[in-house]
Amino acid sequence: MSDPTLARERALWAAGARYVAGVDEVGRGPLAGPVIAAAVILPRDDGPWEGLRDSKRMTAAERDAAAVCIRARAVAWGVGGASVREIDRVNILRASVRAMRRALARLAVSPDHVLVDGNALPDLGHPHEAIVGGDNLSLSIAAASVLAKVTRDRLMVALARRYPAFAWETNKGYATAAHLAALDLAGPTPHHRRSFEPVAQLGLFRVTGSRDHGITG
Image (cartoon, rainbow, N blue to C red; front, side):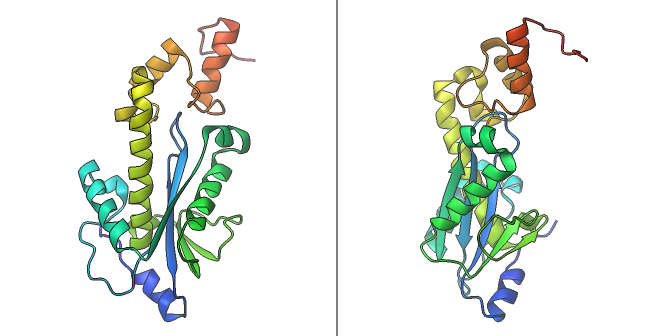
């Protein structure tokens, strides 16, 4: 798989856009923790970005080093989040959009155009182009994916110190076997998403006293 480039950003610059922001989010799938988004505006002429790619294709050490570089070299960057309460109240998609809007609002300059990983988001509040697999294609989106991932991972590591049974320092809130076992034993924390099925089902079993996961009817 090839590394992301500035091809889409350059096309927008050539069309008259001064600032192009890449936006990505991390944390839609976990059972616990917030969803975090980042927005990054990269400079037009600033040399190569060696090793910068989709955060999922980088090691933790590579992401940490890249995040330092992004913050130092970017024209502007911002990070935003949506809490577990918001996720449970409005659903994960809408909460993700809120996180993205907050990240964009924290940019030091307002973007003329936004590149978003995934599908179009009518409520984003900015003219944007949605790119499926954008974190593997657009360097700005890849940079945003790195900042979002580093921020959320550090937050989950910090929360893990308060709730060591769930091993969030390693699973980051995703539904690993160890996480599910701890959830079954200890029950949900305030940082678990009650609207997500494994957590909601656990609550049902605890209320009914049933351990039969084959409930029908």
